[in-house]
Image 1 (cartoon, one colour):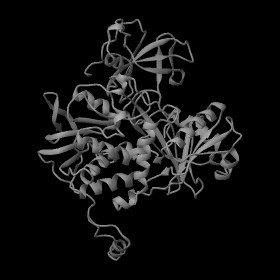
Image 2 (tube, chains in turn brown, purple):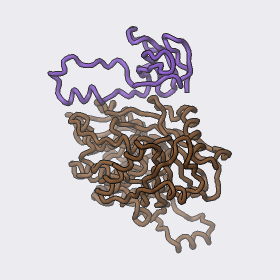
Image 3 (cartoon, rainbow over the protein chains, first blue to last red):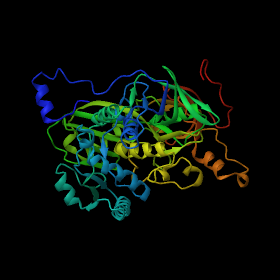
Image 4 (cartoon, each protein chain N blue to C red):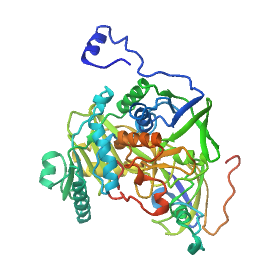
Length: 414
Length: 96
């Protein structure tokens, strides 16, 4: 693996950058692995990376149906935060933010993590009570959050229209929140995992599981059968499809979640600004594009498209809150398929099949959790016992009733 | 975004409707005998198929009545809409 540094950059610049080696190999699948990860998105690659670097398991393959990072990892709005209500969520998401804070150094790859601060606007008495309760809970978990007045919001976001249809009454600010570059996260984990010995196998679709005595022993793929001691499935919107192949159901429904970006503008939006009340959120990428998103579509779908009415609703809210953007042209729109649980918390779990693990249900907000999700999932698979942070997120909480209801913190997609 | 044919009102824009997920899930009548796992399956676990689904919709901004839709979750094609009391329609040729 070529180490990235100022010196290697200068050295390669002298050669017009023609001699950089490939960042990861493209190996043929072996007949057997200790662990197979199904799904080459950011969560799957992070899992493989931590298996190889922290758990001492390097005989690992990541099987990806198409190309790595081509699903929701490349179809999100790159927001990172950990301002959740419940203790279980705080532990998981803040574990993630702490890993984000050192990730570029650890991976020797600039993931462009930018802690630019994240504002949750409140537009009603109900919103104020919600951020009051949640902000206090976040404090008790030792995570940063501040209540800010509309005047302070106006200072931070001078172009906001505080007296819009649903006036801004206050906001919750997490200064450690921000954004990262989604593609860089995928590539950084892929490069790190590959260097540690993980085989990343693209264009390899898993079509079934090989199960003997209720224990998974391998997978059937478009490139032949591959045996494994353990299998971890990180398939996001297609988790229900994978579960059906293994013979059980998941408490999930899959919805399209749309986002869109504008033409590039000069730097204007310094923070990430979210609003559950009017359903829209916005940030500005380092390229200058406004990155905008809102709710998922109302019906289940695997189409990766979504309806135009959702875009219209989203942009109505954006234009009302930020009239300055009324004449900005939107450039691209996309939809990812998100797997949503009823309590809006993820599922990191053992399954009814032995040695088969699932990491799914991240719904509309999985990007922020990438490092933490991969980290605790890797340790759970390696040990055969769930990591203490992952334990409460078992799929069997839907049998016991111990739900982790983050409906309020995640009411708007993000 | 699609046009949905309400079995009572005819073709209308999707924005008049709201869906409430998988149809044909009957509430168990032997609740006192059921385990927590069986209750959990009934309340929370869904087929979530990639392919043809049957789901409940309500014509909220119209007649406010419930009906079922048979729809493909990849192409979004609607094969049938029918009243809750109607028998399940046949799957289209060559599917599933």
